[in-house]
Image (cartoon, rainbow, N blue to C red; front, top):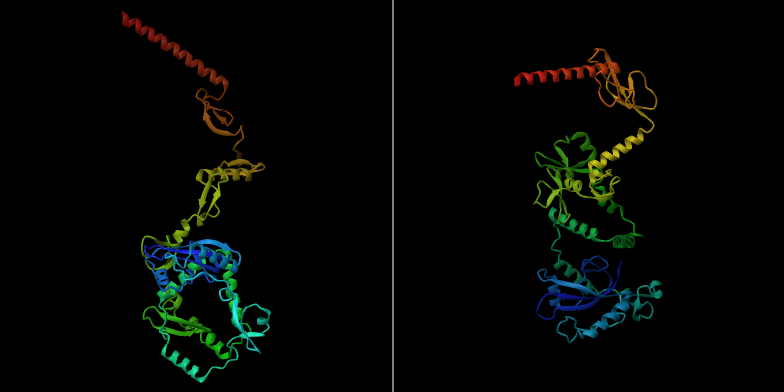
Length: 435
């Protein structure tokens, strides 16, 4: 949100002066830096050359602190004037300020110099003044013809001061730096600041192009020579051609002739710097801080969730979007809950031929045995007394060795008689040894 600030700049050096107090309208403060309405860092409007040299010097530490935020530009100027008088900035050797702030139409924003279209009277008026809007007052140079001498001097100036960059092109590295810098600045904006910036750009474009018709030559020059064309490169010879896209699709071998975008990405992968979050397409990582973007975003914790079983908080990455449990144990518990809910009202059966298990609501047939039936046969054995085969049921807690009660009694009686015979034999052996 843009506002009006009164600030103080402090430069980290022992020599005096090393401070400056000023005010700025339509600005915002972020990460200890003051930005103007266009998103550029603002350090003041001092006329002292040494001050600006110190600001440009990156080796010198400097800070800017906000003294107060004001609701309007006039209040900001009034507050700046009060602070100037309080610190006596003109005579104080600590400050770069050379005068105390004044309040007039030349210092207030939103004012311009205009002249009356009939009388020629020159005044300072707000840019949204009714007489400015209805063209009663116009710009001071409007309708004033330039002399031939002025025009010739202007031509000579432009001839002798040719742009040093004319005829040159940016390298890929410089283009990348410019785009990366703009991207970093745009990402640093908050939602409100980005909305203001988008509106500002749309208004600028609307004011620039609305009501203007482009000539056919301009449209042809801007889009005609590239429409339906493609730039291709031979990966074996390095030859470049600018041809029609249809011709490229029909006549050229795509394994040898690459488009310019595809050619640039040969052998490159997308890497990201874990410290600065800068992304590049590289053949090999520059240092340890550069990792593959797929690895970085795959392992990066995107959000925290609460486990549906134990209610503990856990983090998930891109590959775990559908994860709702914190551990394998909780996952197995959740699975068992879901399976029990899905099989509610069903019984577990086992196929006696294949050994397969399934859940059925009704009896499926002779081949299927109810697995939880207490009368289900779980084994078949041979009686050790009568040697007849018998079945053991699920409800019986131990595996019997006899088929009936009678066989059990006979087995017990045999065991007791055998024990008595063994005791008698032991007594005879002891008596014979004493003799």
